[in-house]
Structure formats: structure tokens, C-alpha cells
Length: 129
Picture (cartoon, rainbow, N blue to C red):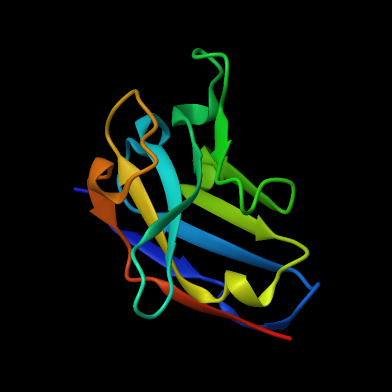
């Protein structure tokens, strides 16, 4: 079992920055694929970003982004701290949503919510115009 706890959400003005953190329990954090998803009211939970296990490049690629956030958001992980981060820069009002951290015990990197095994409770991000 993996328990995930997100933090860092809040209110930010358009064009500003915010960093989300996701602290994970468990001694095998480094082997999990970690992802961030977001869900706006009345909408489905959408993929935002993901990072491969151990940030490794065995597949030739370690990070993945939705087109809507590419170039603005950065996902990273600190395996020593069992934490994954989402740095959000140049935020837009359409980035407003509840952001969820997710973990997957596997070697592929899904872009759909059903591909992940464990979820956090979410943290609200609100971007004002």
C-alpha cells in the first residue's frame, strides 16, 4: 500500500507560480511511476504530468506532460524524501482544479486515471484572472 498526501495548493493570480508537493509513504517509492491529474467541477479527471520510476531514462524518456501544460509545468521527484513535485509556472485561469497525486506500481506511464493504483485526496488550485 502507498499513501499519498498532497500539499501546496491555494489561490494564485494568472501568470504566477505555485509548487505542489506529494508525500508518499512506503519504502519502495522509487519504483513507482508518479503522476499528477486534475479535475475541474463537472469535468473528468485529466492527466497533467507523470514521471518514470526513479526518474530513470531506461525507456529513453522520464517525464510526460499534457499538451495544455507543456512548457509551463515541471514534474520532478526526490526519492530520498519520498516526494514528487509539480512546479506550476505561468498559470492560467483554466488551470483551476483540484489536483491529485497518483502512483502506479509498474513500468509503463499511463495518461489515464484508471492506470494508477493509489491516489491522494487532492489539493485545490484556484487561478484568478
